[in-house]
Image 1 (tube, rainbow, N blue to C red):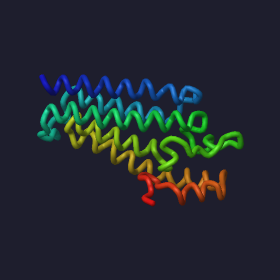
Image 2: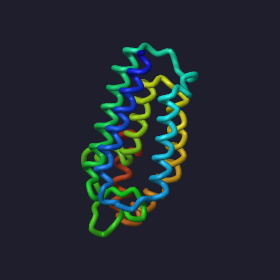
Image 3: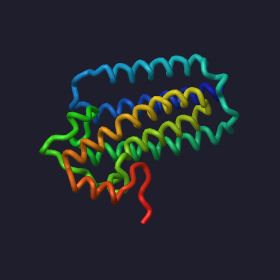
Image 4: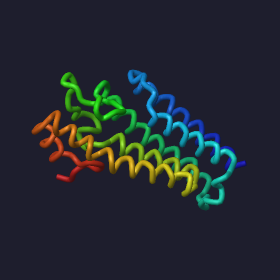
Length: 185
């Protein structure tokens, strides 16, 4: 019964996240293969999660720690994720090539005042929260592996494009901020 409650909480929080996140990408009406891949992976993982396929990978975490700790970490990840999107506003784009136009500016407010990639950091915090909540190393391990590969390929291209578009201003910003953690002064 406890696992069922956690599965309901996990799925409800996951749906809330994706529904709210869609408000940030509304202005990109084009459906891409990348979007399809994300939704297919999410649907497959959700299906396997609901039907207990990955239950053999459960870790023995205290139920209260899972619910309270996981929810707190998820909340912090949600805050960073949505704050980052809010500060980027129209400067955000799911496609690197469309991300930079002459009318857009280099965002250095909110989380971007301290780190250059707060959305990626928030994604990892969210996965940590889902890991604590589900206590399932396999269910979270698959998305973590996918995100690491994705980030390792995307971040260098993004930073190259930012340097190309903002030049010295971005180079100075890069010296002041950390990629994933704030720089210590």
